Amino acid sequence: MPELPEVEHAARGLGAQIVGRRIVAVTRLDWERMVEAPAVEQFVALLEGREVLAAGRRAKWILLTLDAGWTLALHLRMSGTITVHGPEAQPDVYTHLVLLLDDGQQVFFHDTRKFGRARLLDAAGLAALDAAHGLEPLTDGFTPAALGDRLRTRRARLKPLLLDQKVIAGIGNIYADEALWLAQLHPLRASDSLEDDEIVRLHSGIRLALLQGLEHGGSTLRNYRNSYGEAGSNQEHFNVYDRHGQPCPRCGSAIEKIVVGQRGTHLCPFCQRLAS
Ligand SMILES: [Zn+2]
Figure (tube, rainbow, N blue to C red):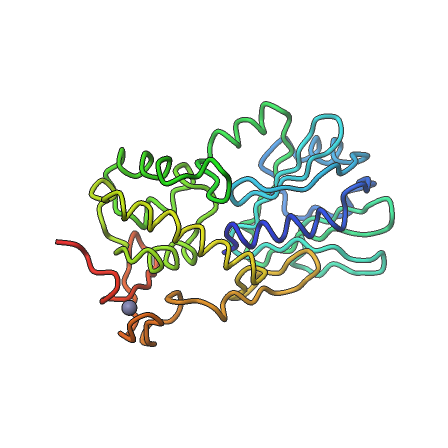
């Protein structure tokens, strides 16, 4: 599932490829449940004629800023990809939304599992989406103090808290496991038991894991592609994720896989001991 680094790359690619272009028509929309808001007919009517002014990201949402005050918010969920193609390209059966642009390019929202979502938001809708999400971990506002505030005022295990988009935005299963390994913290550690130095380690672990993901174009386990159709290579640089049974890069112990909140969770049993 795409997380912050993957969504960021998807948005940057779209920014480079389609900003300044106008959406001439929605030439395919064959999975109406993809559109969460407004009603499908309105969604199509409002999109047609809109110019793409900017491409950005909030949490795991791609945000295309359009003219007339609209924002097209797109969520890739499990298996979505958004790619840009020439005029001759033909969408396959898994391409559920196609936008035709004024230069003949086409934007394909491809999604084999159909969990991907689109919303066309006005200013109030955009503000609501923003308010529904927590700290952006790569912004200046994400400080050890801000992180400590969010963690210590809750009583939960660390990993589920890192995955909670209302607390910190953009982290999913891969980068949570990698961040906790970097910070040498056990995924089941109680959030209100963290010492100051552990908060500092977790803060830098989160940043490092995400920055490494960004540096390598994101992680591609199955489906993820950027807007050019390119896979990321960060999966070649995982320290713990998807490496159970293999040696920890820091201490050589065998990486373990446990289940935390129904999510497969990878850790080093020596580097990430549950403090007594
Ligand atoms: Zn280790």
